[in-house]
Image 1: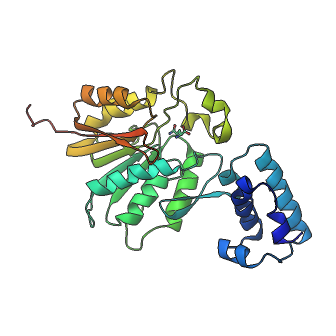
Image 2: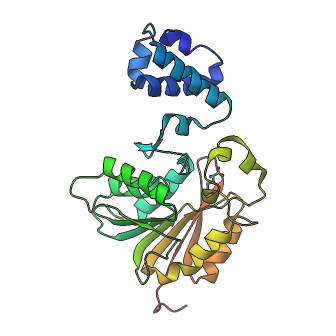
Length: 279
Ligand code: GLN
């Protein structure tokens, strides 16, 4: 089979076939585009057909090719981690607004998964002291691999810690805490659809309303933020009011809701005033 023939088929899934073929041939997009006559050998042919069949059965492209781009960086992904999503780039954008270039601030990424947020942040702000926590040792292995691959020369290595939310950082405070926690409601039918069927359930679902982990992350944030420090979280499009209430109950101020590229309210941020600030 030639490259040209391998890419034939439904125009809607041509982009996916291209990604699968690039993985099999270990070639770039540009090479593939300029070599339509290149011939796949027998082994490549079989591997490609197997991937196309698995994709047709629903497996996410990112898991099949073992990578996904996030904030311009190619990241390794495995079924041990949530596939990084474009809307989470908004969380990185917001964090960068809070952290001037050259900032040496301490930042905490809770539930780092593939390490997407931590790695992108350090790449943009190489002076930061980044700590990334995940409960899953398998996820931390993937995250450490991504951190090593994209480590800015001269930066402090990301400190990866295994454990539940703040458990690995007792008594520590940070300038900024970020989280893209599980926030899908346990009974949400989306869990049985599309890519979500193949992703780690523990990275997606969080109690009957999807708020169990957000509650813990927000409630304990004041114990781990510097005075004036900020908490920024991603959540479901219908969880903005609930998140705002959690932030207020935790004593966080200047609570702000931001929208994703699709116009949905998906991010909430707030500032910890510290023990001294009066109303
Ligand atoms: N954004 C994901 C989805 O609904 C969920 C990710 C998460 O729970 N953090 O597809």
